[in-house]
Image (cartoon, rainbow, N blue to C red; front, side, top):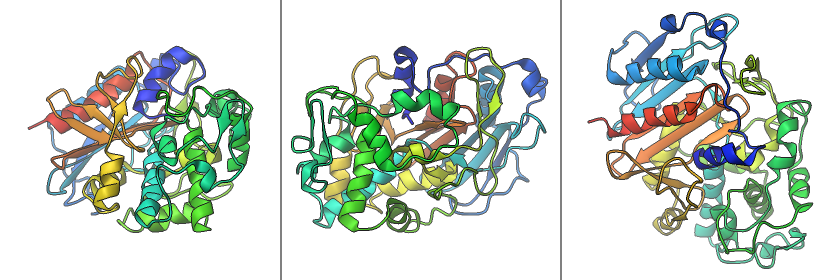
Length: 405
């Protein structure tokens, strides 16, 4: 799982999720000029969506252009204005075989947006006095983090959420397998951590910043230890149910499908290869770092509620929004900064958006919320680029939606 920045970095680092530039075969989508696009208004992020009104506006044209030029099988977009009025758009096809219609606000694997949910629960525990951000991880998980240059007595809880712990990445050794022979393999959280601990620390805690999914596996284990309850339950009760995310859930053990209306997810193992259907996967390898399923509308609602103070006390929200610099070259956009499970990305029109982003086999999602209350989330049904700069094109749709007057 990666956020938007991690996806950009993967182009240089080999076995990351956003590593391939794939040319989609024209036959896979049929005639490009006939790809469908639609937009449907609703009265709010939690209202039922209607498809009987299809506005011919610039957002719809952006979606049509994205599917045509970037060759994603499907794209879904949800926008919300400052008053919470939402509009939903789709483009492409839900299934390359049947050419079925893309479900409006359909469910997708949310990937690393899960990290923001996990960070939110940790910060809620901080607000309840049960966790100290500047305490060593050892305080809550004694003897857990031990390895070459790795010691839980020197890593702070804050550094997990901020990606400054130096913990090595567990996804690199298994990434090829989870796209292939291990796609249906169940991983225990400790399995994931054990994979990471076989490797040397990337750097001393606090020395620099480097994105690592391992940080959030440890954060998930911390939540379970402090609360005495399963992570899935805590995310559901403390976040999902609390703000009424009706289409977001944490898949159960062994659950490989996606509940409810959804487009198929695709992947091309190498540039130029035919897209293959990877909708059914065991997402347990993502766990606290990337296992959630959601919709663009629900992700808008989540990030809006979070930034609006509905989930955290002011002190903890301020900590989450306190950012550090992301290394140059990590992101295609200059000036990206990272807080505690939350990224800040400059907008082309000035100002910035807050969000995260996520990538996992079959889907790529990119949400953003402005300080002024506007929200936009795009989801596309491939997480390795069908064409060069395909994700940059998807991100640009969100930027345009948030900057549009």
